Image (cartoon, rainbow, N blue to C red; front, side):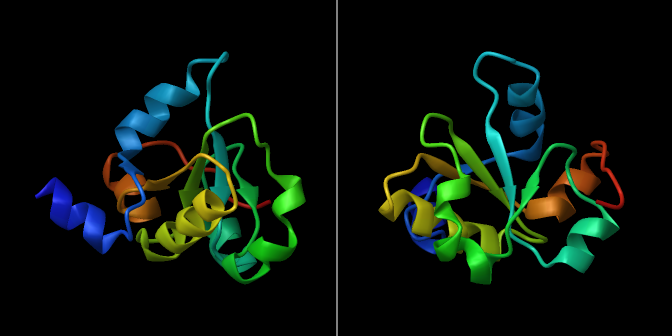
Length: 116
């Protein structure tokens, strides 16, 4: 099953919403959150502290991302964020995909922030 999941995600590792939430509590190794949705989706509800860079702008804005931290890519369902994570890994970043995206985050009743 993990092999199938890996193939479907293009070989990019995924992380669950619960595991992301736990990782964010560790101040020394907390991941960098990258939301790759559109601005209106982001304003409708996002993970607090996530940086918005829409997927179609990502390649032009790589210099805004840290090379020394794991980046967790976020979208609505996990499809766009999987593409973003693949792009980042191929550019030399350590990136993970938030499995199930914001849908999973909200299903787990984790906190979201509305607005900018």
